[in-house]
Length: 243
Image (cartoon, rainbow, N blue to C red):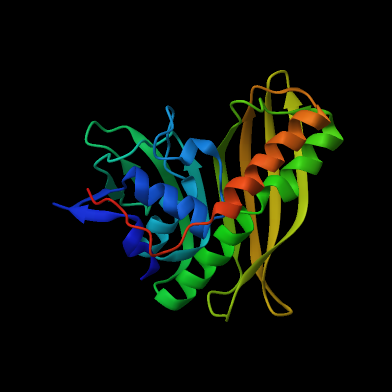
C-alpha cells in the first residue's frame, strides 16, 4: 500500500504529519507549492492526499463529488465518518469538516484499480502548474501573488462508466478560468482513459486568490523557482516523522 508512508493511524484516528504531507506533495503529486513545505507558516496538507486516503478506506464509486471545506494543518486527529446515505466526512474531534464526499452508484474496493486510479489522478493533478495554469492565467491576463501564491481546491467530481480497466490515465480536454476581482475559479475537465477506452470523466475546480494583472517577468521567476525546487528531488527513502 503506497499510502502507508503518508499517514498513520492511532486509536482509530488518522494523523498526517507535515513531513508526510510534504513528501506526498513533492514525490507523488509533483506539487512544489511552498504551502506544503513542513516549515511553511501557513502549511496545509495537500487535498490530493485526503482524496487518496478516502478512496483507500471507502472504495471508489461510479459517482463521487468531493467538497474541500477547510485547509488541514499538520498532526490533526482525523475521523472518517460515513453517514447512512453514504456521505463521507473527514473532520477533527471538534467537528470541523475538512472534506465532504457524496457518492452513489456501483463501488469497487479493488485495491489495484484504486491505486492505479489514484496515482493517475494525482499525476495529472501535479501537472496543473506550470503546464496548465501558466498559459491559462496568461491568456486571461491575470496571475496569483507570486510571493504568496494562493491556489486551493474547491471541489472535484468523478463520473465513471466502468470500474474495471487496466492502467487508467487522465487526459485534460478543457480548462477555463473565470476572474472576479481578486479571486478566480479554475475548472479543469479530464477524460479517464484506459488505452483507447473511455472510462468516464473527472472535473476539478480550484480557487485562486490575490489575483493581479499578469506579469511575464514575475511569472517567469515563479516557474524558475518551481523547477529549481523540483530539481532538488525527493526520494521515497527520505525519513518521515511519525505522529
